[in-house]
Amino acid sequence: MTVPRDHSDALTEISALFDPEADAASPPARTRRWRGPVVVLTVFALLAAAVGGYVVWALSAPLPAATLFASAPEPPTTEPVTLAMPTRAAAAVVVTGFDESVQTGGTMSAAVGGSEPRPIASIAKLVTALTILDAYPIAPNEAGPTITFGKAAHDLYDDYYVRGATIVPMPTGITMSLRDALSVMLIPSASNYADALATWAFGSTSGYLGAARGWLSEQGLDDTVIVDPTGISPANTATPEDLLALARIASANPVVAEIAATTSFDIRGIDRVQSTNALLGVDGVTGLKTGNLGMEQFNLLFTARIDAPGGQRLDVVGVILGGSTRASVDGNVRALLASIRDGFRQIALTEPRQRVGTVETVWGESSAVVVAGSPAVRVWSDAPIDVELRATAPVHQTAGTGVGELVWTTPSGAQSARVVLAEDIPEPSAWWRLTHPGDLADW
Image 1 (tube, rainbow, N blue to C red):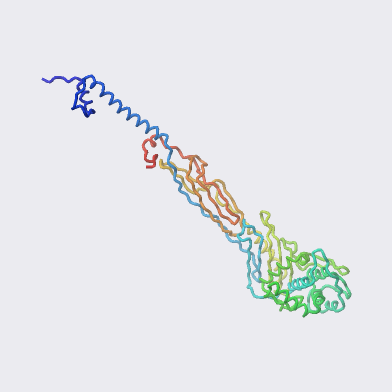
Image 2 (image 1 turned 120 degrees about the horizontal axis):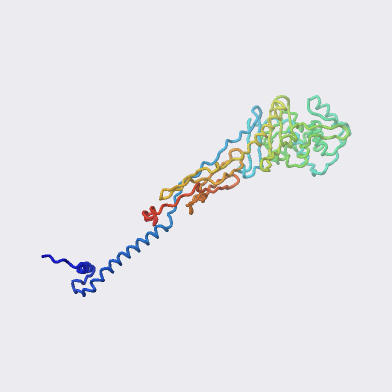
């Protein structure tokens, strides 16, 4: 017959499983009765503590950093400015004064129609004036020596009249200062005054020519040929490049620059004369000298100052050779200056809140990455612009959190804009935390 087992005997057998010396010695029955429950409770307590510790850690552990997937947008580009250069004449222009915010290097130049020497006509009178002032320098506020023109100078009026040159009366015995005589030579372009002044200064035309050649050589104007002080001969020639250099030299001479910018001049005892340069004061033109040898041979060596956007002032030196009429040359100059002025552009570097990427998390949430703000830059023509994305991992995951910056390199230097999260990134659920210990511990 089977005898029912006592519950205490069963517990004793169980506790014996945890006692390596149970077979060696059997403790009293009372000890066997309480040791078993303590061990079991201890095991369960340790398990509970471990689970609780894990839960606390999982719910409070720092989240792994989000990953940024982004790239810099294409930098803005503009079409290059097409300067309005003449189509039926030779021309060259140099523009200086650009600051680094609009044009790398600060200078722009262009030329059409070839680089060979061409007749310069009365532009040669600038060489005459500068050669004389090299021998007889006068200060900006001085009149210079007094000159008396005799009968030989008076007779030049008729000589140049029959040759169709521009002339201004010169009564025998008239006296005037060197400055006034130069003004009559340059403002109305009086050829008889140019001839008379050259003879006064150097004794003869040949004396003047020798001095002019020396002066041209000193200035490095090796492609300029002068055969008379007036420019009436087509053998007076120069290249466009030399003429631009001549314009800079003339503009740097305060006496010549002031005379060349004068629209009219009163000759004591004679009359008021007008400048042949009708563009003076128009569209910023400040000088310098006209010249013509008849149809299809109208020239203008000019300087101008353009007030550009942002308070910038550009200095323009240009020449047009071989224009069909005086009006066409003037029109060409005005169109050219307008095209320089219109070449300034205000460019947005990015669209407002332009998307440049995404931030993604390991728990499956994400946010678009956008540009905060819309910076702009002022450039001239197609000045180069580069852009770079400098990214950082987001520390916080709320809208507006910075994740880097875009840096544009422009002629004026660097401009930047923050790159931010477009919206909040939700926290992961507690269940995700509890079930993804490897992601939390970065295993």
